Length: 162
Picture 1 (tube, rainbow, N blue to C red):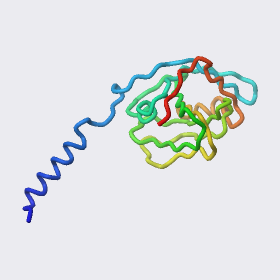
Picture 2 (tube, rainbow, N blue to C red):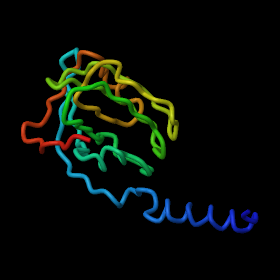
Picture 3 (cartoon, one colour):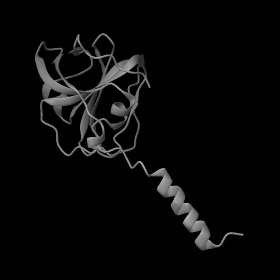
């Protein structure tokens, strides 16, 4: 029978091995940037610079560990296929608005003011191809609602499915 000391030592070895690679940090994954335009239902066009999350590692990290983001910036998650998407805010310190966007650029649903570090699931509710994350309050301030149109960059690199 194992002593308590042996059991604890074994448990610490397992934890050390499991975390040897360490958590993904902001500097671990690089993102390209692209311009993006969103046209609201009232006809106004708003320009953003978005970082592109095209690989599974980029999509997994997203905006985690960031402490700030310029007002006209965001992140575009390309899922390489149309499907229902689940997001969360684990390790994300910035409150965000999430736009769930169809393959043809239509904003299908909007989730405003996602709570930093929450592990609650944020569901697209419908099949989508993209998620755009913006600073919280941007959707309301600019009247970005379902039915808005996103000009997906024509030269967007091909995303890799999970």
